[in-house]
Image 1 (cartoon, rainbow, N blue to C red):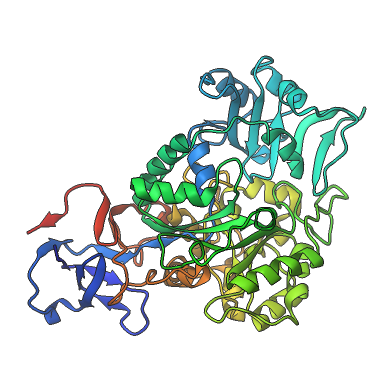
Image 2 (spheres, helix red, strand yellow):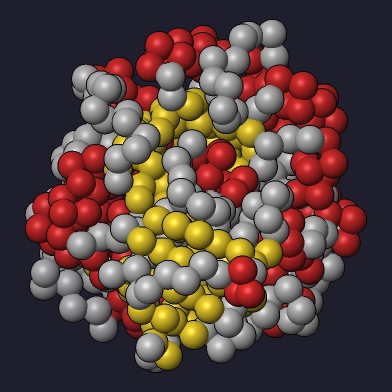
Length: 531
């Protein structure tokens, strides 16, 4: 049935018609949009939103939904639940691991723990010596494990660091239980694999959570084939009722190993499609594994290099052949320089979006900013990192440097294609996937504890919305979304507050009143008045 949305205050993200007060939906698409006094005499269900603000559905350009769906079932090791290693031990000890046989926790940040350090094997042995224990750091790049997990993985004093990874060791050379970057896989590969049915069930639950945040299109930024193929999982979830469209980015190792790229899998008109190839150039700032030119404070650490020019070019050749994107995780200035220097004199292969994206782009050098703007490299930053991980950033970099990171205003002034995103669940915030937290972080440049994050990098609410809608749509090359205009999918969010006039320090508290995907109400706080 045709739906007629009226009595609305609509932000369209369309420069030709930036605002409207009424909208007509048919067949999941926008048939007409404009001012209510110009509304043609259509017949259908009239939905009076009673003056509420409507925005396009949020598009998250960088997240990890399958991981997010998984950690929602694990022990949360972050505020407001956890403030010390002792809290972590107690939470793990009280967790029912009968379904998995492993004790799993996620989200710790040593900057928020009373002890100001990562949990060690001796700590986690207190939670259990019989069951293997894994606690993942908030960034997702570091894990802490107990003695049982080390034994299962065969990690001893004599185990060599894997390429692109590090096993932390004590003064005697013994593993401490902290595993960084690729060293994580020594343990993670032994985790029992959940069934396809179980993962799909978790994804369906996540779809509802995302809808409650107003998120209508998403990305999967670390897809793999084994033990269960991610593309197949999302397709199955869509068949079962998963609402959001998904752009999937496979890790380079699996692109080389399997025949994943076909006309069918890269079809961007589909509900799920392969958007590109994912590589890692370094680790994280908060975990001191980002590849930097100047050592982290109080140490001689300069991070971990995880790729090379040769590997980047090899992956780019495949991306070019199939007309998809190359996306590279890079936080440190040296990691970012490697990417922009590699491609600066290469020819871009896409015309509708950046051929190469830099994920995070925490601290690009002036040279990198210039070259990225000239060549058309896209940046996908996460201001939420500074907002909620401020303790670790200050400890690792100091205030002056921290205030320049994730410089969205600088990116926009330079003309660099940019999109906002959450990177959920890889940050220390209980509602990491909530886009309004990221919007507040980008608009106020103030951390959750009031720390000034550098006012020069503030952006407006309108700019933040654009970076989460139409610019995000362009960044991930998803068709017919991101704007409210005729012919586009009817993906939109009815808000409880007017975020364009709301106090900026209240933006994180904005709640969707209702979320629509392809004209269907997939979330609502209460019944909207229909006639």
